[in-house]
Length: 526
Image 1 (cartoon, rainbow, N blue to C red):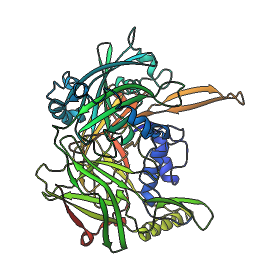
Image 2: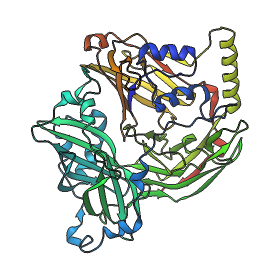
Image 3: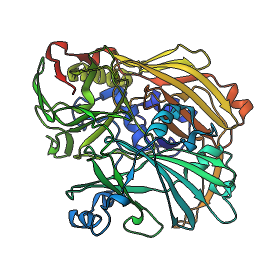
Image 4: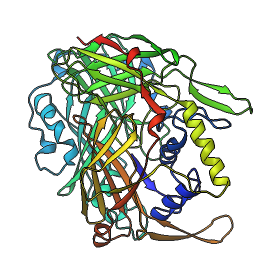
């Protein structure tokens, strides 16, 4: 996630609004933050006169996927598929990790970069920046892209702040230099899929910037594949071609897989179907692709409502375990991109054992009646002027071991807290079962210095002002599922931030969720 933490809109109720507003910016809450806060009260159930709330998912640019099959096939014309032009995966030096300057949460990716690596060395210009694709680390599931950015005269980091006079940290500024890339993955038969390259990490190396991005296509990659990489440039309506790399993956083992199928669960709430398009496990990743079977309908008030169609199981409400006893943990790139309504849902998992031969899918049921009763009771109590349980939980981040129950079935445990300059990092590890994109939002419980900005309204000519607190990134380890929340503050000093150890989290009532073990389905992985 990449959230400018601003809090000007409604936050669900007066108590929650007061807590969030006191801690963060008086601007508009980003949609993805609002959705997570709202899930505290309604989760996935349909509440009267309200749309059913979905797990927060951000939309990709639609134009990034508008690549015709004919154009994709053309990539393999002429010598593109000549054996001498295809790069094979081999042992590499994992140069991106050599300086130990990357985020520690990505250290687990180094072994893969050392064992499956292809040196590329192609260079292109993107908005005046020289971008070099140094290498690709790839198997049939994912491709990790390692880039270097250079600019004549170097990069002026002071010009990369979000606001004039802002003091946010170097790492946050560098992320704005990473180009937005769309990658088309094309097989020899001409089948193509296009996905955004998810931004993971960037750091300064002398006058250059080293970058790490991840491509997770909807389909497994074949033995021979071409990555056609495009970059979004200023003023362009479509991403522009920058790199084309042909890869020979014949010597890379095919991933273990669960056959694509409709999995039917006989649950306590009736028969539910999970449409599984892909479940594959390889050295670099474990990937599940599902059809969320979403649709739009009109409710009794005439409003359009979006949600999972009747009889379908929301892929976010599935617990996956292996036959060794591990609960698989959903992980996310945390870069603000994602999949929108009605599209296939791509989920990466951490924690699958290399010894696993089967996986079990267990539906997790949401008690919509309990959620509705809680909401109604809260609304009535607020009308009477009574104090209500708003799901608030106090957390001392300086004391490792504090558990934050996202649901009654699992959550995250604080494992560490650190302050470096203007950036606060809070580390958490998951326990039990957690939903995709459910890393808890930890908000300072006390006032933190904010940066005040003034401007002139171009329409009215009036002077306006706003205050800004921090920009937030949440990153996860693709091997363990552990997360780090990084808040880079615009004004607060390191001394001040070290004095703030009390945070607030908002959690869902435990009784809203229950796994239906009797309905579980175990399928072979082979």
